[in-house]
Length: 231
Image 1 (cartoon, helix red, strand yellow):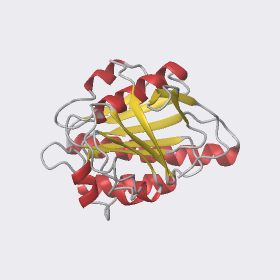
Image 2 (cartoon, helix red, strand yellow):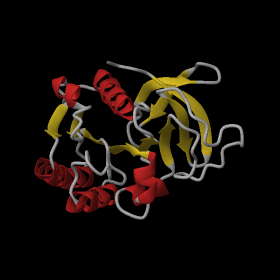
Image 3 (cartoon, helix red, strand yellow):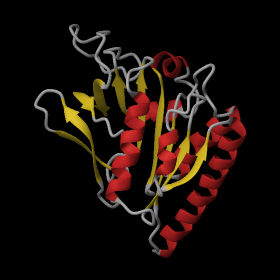
Image 4 (cartoon, helix red, strand yellow):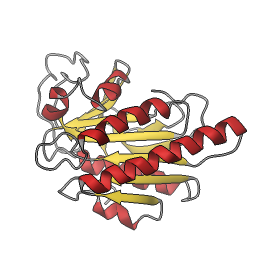
């Protein structure tokens, strides 16, 4: 799921817990991120921090952000960003938003073949597969999985947040399956390593962590992190 060769954009989103150095994600290398954790662990905060960090790095002409919020409306403050090109918080709106992004991905592919520049597209989805708060339909989830495939090699990013138990129980279903295969994610609030099979040490495994603290996983490498609060 890497985007090697794309424009380097470095997003600060927190700190490394061991030495308090800035946690910076390189969007030229990282395409998508699966954000998991129990309730009230800081998942929505991370999504908001990512969006605001990106908006502070690139102009609205350089990047478009699409937000699929849960019924809790935790991402609603992002609507104030001029970079947000679409916001949805119910299944019908979410399906329409995803179809619009699908059309944009097609345009991006044409621009790439023609050697033309194309804006970066980021989709944020909160509370995926949560029983009561999820606002993505079954068809929408399948479409997100196809977007991951069609967006390879393009400046396209998908961030999906959800409760660890929900995502682990649906690890066979899209888009969790494709995101899990990418082995890039953040687990907050717990040392439960079942979703990414990271094999944390005995002392860390299943340990409860403060809100906003957790583990950043990238292809088997694990580092303890603390997410910045942008609100």
